[in-house]
Image (spheres, rainbow, N blue to C red):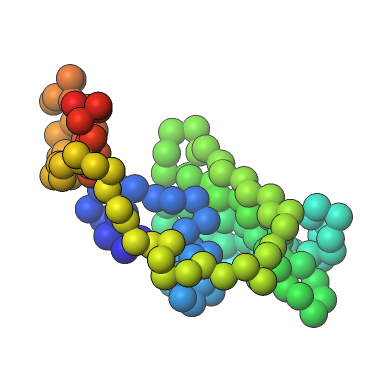
Length: 142
């Protein structure tokens, strides 16, 4: 789903690599080079600091040292975009006890909602009045 969102709609979600079944495999699939900088502090924890280069992004991760190797900091640099903007995530709390149930993923549209087709626009620049569509619209929104 994440690949389709990127390929079809040019949508990238921050930290999406952490939500896949094999985060390590997914994160390093397009890595061209990597550097280990040793131990460095992040959020008060001693962490392993690693940096990775890919075609369009560079990213760094700080992974807590010790028996619970949790990601504490992540910095992504979008080097192919003007100004090379950065995204930084500081992860202060991990909760492994709470589980997500299957029912959390069941969508129930509000009464009167109708399906609206969602299409990626190839030539948005040629359509100055173009507004993105949503997947559903309730009667109040139309």
